[in-house]
Every structure is written in structure tokens, then in C-alpha cells.
Length: 251
Image (cartoon, rainbow, N blue to C red; front, side, top):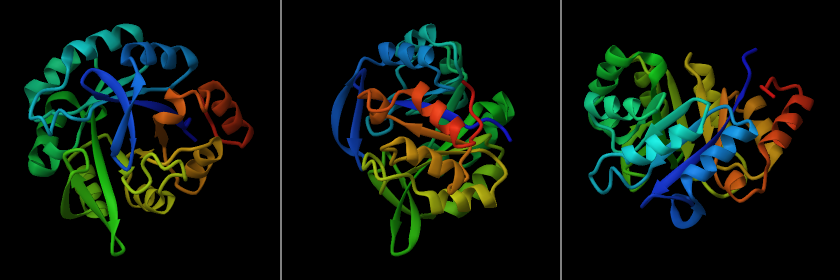
């Protein structure tokens, strides 16, 4: 079995790391460059950097900040926010990103996935999907969760895979920031129905939640923010507990 990955997430707004609950009530969580360096040193498997207001403000991701973060890390580094073209991805890769994450732009223009995969390869393209449960259906939301659609999570995930994306980052907006655990039923269905890796996001509150999402949710990786930013969970301790629970991790 492939090693499961632990991925801290830096949600960036106005150049600072922020964290909220259910995508609102954001509070400051520190300097992204300092946090990135700490996570790289402490054993994170990857790092995700999401410029959460780029799409809403109709601007590009902060390439300078990406460059400064990339200087400090020696682990794979994924960047998302405001990406809508091949040129945008070129800029970010030149500034040190290893992968890019697209979300709203992919829903609005699904051909973008094919174009990016053709230019940069599947391994470089992550499609992030933010979804909420409404009347028993998981519906995709855009623009940092602010714009609901009628698009079904599972239908969209299958199309994303078909178009060549290398991974899916699924965030349950209902679970985000609540610290009540990941959306494991939805994650397990995604992992069963798709053949590409699924990254779980939204709901981490304690170390057991990570074990649960790898076992019950069948996730390939688990992403979290506040539990790492506010020192509630240390990555080294988390990985040792996962190993003790029989889950393969890189120590």
C-alpha cells in the first residue's frame, strides 16, 4: 500500500495565512513563509497554498509569495487560487510550485483541465472541489464556496478524472473548520468510484480523525489547517500514531 500523505494547507488572504469555519469567520493564523518552513522541517509530506480571495477579487495568485514559500520548503508544493490559463500555471511553476490546484475555473471551462494536462502532465494538475450537502445531494460550490451550483460532486469528480487530472482535493464545506471529522462516506464513495488519488479536506480536529479518513474514508491523503497552525497536533506525533494504527506513512 502506498504511504498516506499528511498535507498542511495555507489559506492565504492579503498575504497572511487565515482559517475560518465553514469558509467564513476568518482569523489570522500567521506568516505563510514561516509556517511553510516549519511544516517542511517537521515532516509534512506536501504543502498546499490556496490564495482564497484571488478568484473573488478577479486577480492572479500571489506569485512573489509563492516564490518565497518555495525557497523555504523541500517537499512537493501545490498552489491554487485565481488560475484560469496555461500562462497562469507557467508563472507559478517558474516561481517554485510543483503542482497547481484549479477549482472554479475548471467548472466554468472544463476544457482547461485537458489543456493543462496536455501542457504540464497529469501529475501536475490537482482539481479542488468544494461541496455542500443539500437535500441528500452533494452540490459543488465555486468562488471560495460563495456560489452554489447544481453540479453533483460525484458526476463532476468522474469528469475531472476523465479529462486527465492527477488528483482531486475534496473539501466538505459542511465539515470545514468544525473539527468533527472528515466527510468519510463521501470520501469512500469517491475513492471507490475513481482511480486517481483523493485528498480529504475539511473537519480535522484530532489524530483519530486522520486514522478514520484513511480507513473509513479510504482517502489517499489528508489535508488540514488550523490543527497544525495553532499547534493542536504535531505532524511527527500524528504520523507515529498513524503508524501504530497500521497505516503506512513516511516518518
